[in-house]
Length: 598
Ligand SMILES: Nc1ncnc2c1ncn2[C@@H]1O[C@H](COP(=O)(O)OP(=O)(O)OP(=O)(O)O)[C@@H](O)[C@H]1O
Ligand SMILES: [Mg+2]
Image: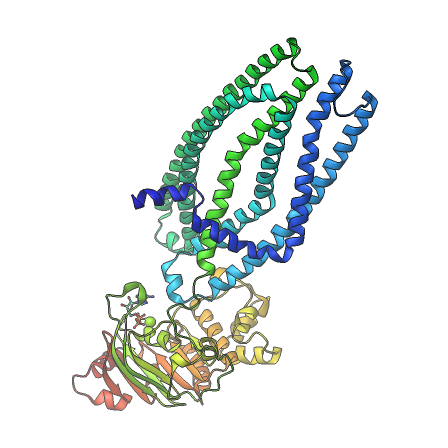
């Protein structure tokens, strides 16, 4: 039963949907004056339009020599009246279009900005739980739908309602008998049309869903096209996409068929109804119960009313779609930012010394709660010292670093910096003190300059150059004809792995953080570049608290403390010399293996 209700609520405009639609109206509020003026000109325009058929009927009466009950105009004067109506109509339409455009464009621009700000400041978990395509369509397609709802659909809906009400009122007054006959036939057609409409909506929704699915395929494969290529799986993706497109075609055609039948239905019944009423009207005129001009007006009004009712269904569907979009948007707008994290409101700049302590830290990722990744980590890094984390892949090294940056909330235990729990630090202020050269360097699609400056957007040209030199970027940047302005391609694919890594180091140098994290920062460098980068890193590490994650033990020989991780636990700690001396130790056997080979 509850499920049934839920399914129905989707086809209709639900209560929650209405609530969120009302709250989205807040984006229109700054432009309310335009909205009201637009609505007024809309109402006025519709009413002026509704005078037309009546006036035309009176004109026909005048032509037939029947004296009008309302106005006494010559045929020439009628010509002027129509001209005025036309001009007024045109002007009002123009004003309305402009005003609604102002409201919807500006209002939706504000909404887009808010929505984007909200999404961009969400926690890691938020992004892990959602697909990029889905989020993108919130900002693009859903807002677009709202935009057209506010600029076109809503206005059109009101216009039709105004025409419907005024049309019925005029008809009831002008031609009461014939109107009664119409009332006996039209509701029947309307009800049938509504039933039909509901079915059409269902198909339309199904088509939309399928379309979204196929868009996800395009987006994901294009985003990771190099994976597709390297596996030579183009054929597989082609088939996957083709299948999904074929599905859409199937649904679309049955959708079209139903729509076609709907048109047959509308044409038959609507025109059938009109002809029937026309016939009854002719009889009334013959009997002298009605003037021919009024029959003329009646036909025109009926046509308008029919059109209004017919378009109501479509408009309703669009509005329901827009309300659905507001609901989805509202869900994101009301989402707490960095939801899994306790944050301090104190945003003032932090000047950390860089003493780090992990105390019995237990952690499992929110999206995989049942797997404990860290099982009681204890770790101490004195300000300005260097600590290395080693251990097998998947043992939790990167996780430790992510927790330090407050990407996730701990299950148990605490992390403190300068003897203060990081829970009590403001996220932004804290992260400003931490620089990271990550395991997988992701660059933005712009220039090398933009990418390096990401570490400090307001850095001077000298600082930029210095950072490029210290990170050993300068040598390859120099070789590019465009230098700093070289476009790195989407996510940096036009640079080699090592070059990307050096850009990341340059970023970190510019950022000049108190705490430095190097997650396998030298992993994709050849021996020579590695030495250069290592020198750069050594310089960079001076006077900073550094956490170095490394598989290759040669790079961490002279750190102050090495922690060996296994399965989320620290199994050994000590200096290189201490750990190497341990008989059968994990580190010493690893070291033996690595140094023997090299
Ligand atoms: N975002 C995530 N959501 C769920 N589980 C994750 C997530 N990131 C990592 N994990 C899991 O946590 C465990 C530890 O991962 P982590 O990235 O910390 O390993 P690592 O020691 O850095 O390994 P590597 O040396 O390969 O980089 C792994 O089992 C991994 O599958
Ligand atoms: Mg890692």
